[in-house]
Amino acid sequence: MRRLRPVAMTGTPRPADALPLAGSGTVWWREALADGALRAAGDLPAEVRDRLSDPRPDLCGVPADRPLVMGILNVTPDSFSDGGAHYALEDAVRRARGMSAEADILDIGGESTRPGAKPVSVQAEISRVVPVIRAIRGSGIATPISIDTRKAEVAAAALDAGADMVNDVTALRYDPEMAALVAERGVPVCLMHSVADPETMQQNPRYDDVVPEVFDHLAERMAAAEAAGIARDRLIVDPGIGFGKSMAHNLALLRALALFHDLGAPVLLGASRKRFIGTIGGAEAGPDRMPGSVAVALHGAAQGVHILRVHDTAETRQALRLWGALGGTEEGQNHGA
Ligand code: 9MG
Image (cartoon, rainbow, N blue to C red; front, side, top):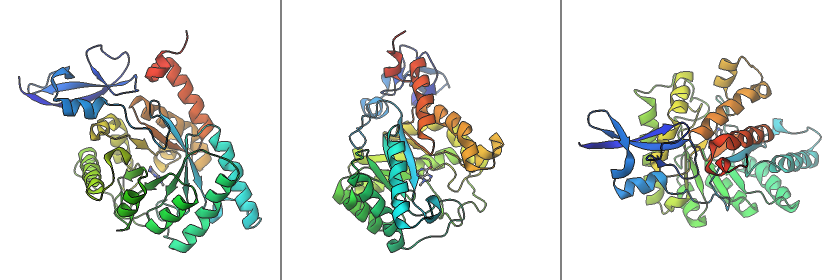
């Protein structure tokens, strides 16, 4: 019977004849046949099998064999104590220290990407993030740092100050210099799906079919990154929850997350405290959305997501520990009885 395509499935226990996603106890693959039946993925071409099931590369030196927690550290003026620059810096380092107890990576950003947010200048953004990164490194915190920016000059200054990777919500499309910078520095980069820019992105987002359109966009951005000289094993992909998406789009993407492993790169999910969590969960204020955010993070982990970008690092880590012990990761399955 003619072979059609690999199909990502989730659930435990994994059937013995299914092809596993490396490191995951819950994501596995079947092969869809022309008559719609699903069978073991044993006959898929070797290249496809490898893309689906090969272990993902280490991320900033951290093995990606369990869901990693990326702690969000925003350094916009409204994020810290208003006692002056010195106190703001101390505050940022204290938060970084607290987060790094449970986070594998810290994501530091100086320009808000919330819907409706206004852009800030390169110099303003550098003056927000660079002193914080220097102070974090100066205080001996060694947790890998991701710089959340779409601007090459900001990324370069942050990498010089001690950051280890780039998180670009425009997938290298905003600044024509960004791809060359990432290629030259050889650092990992997160390519996130977005439409338009933060100021206008939530104005009537439209797709014919959101999941394949986001998938194809990410495949195209991976190809563009490779064409610019960025090694494939430096790429991370992200469906961009909330970036030019309605509630229905966000939910469709979250349900289909496992499909994105077919891109052959680690998958990052950022849903923490976003509006749809407040709407569905009945929580207006950001911090009140923590329980819903943890629920979505666990859903992401069950779909094999490699990096969870979250505000509430300790709560997310605790939930993941329990989830792992109950069989969520290959490592967790070996947890003593
Ligand atoms: C900066 N930022 C805000 N939301 C994000 C998300 O969902 N993913 C990534 N990679 N970055 C985000």
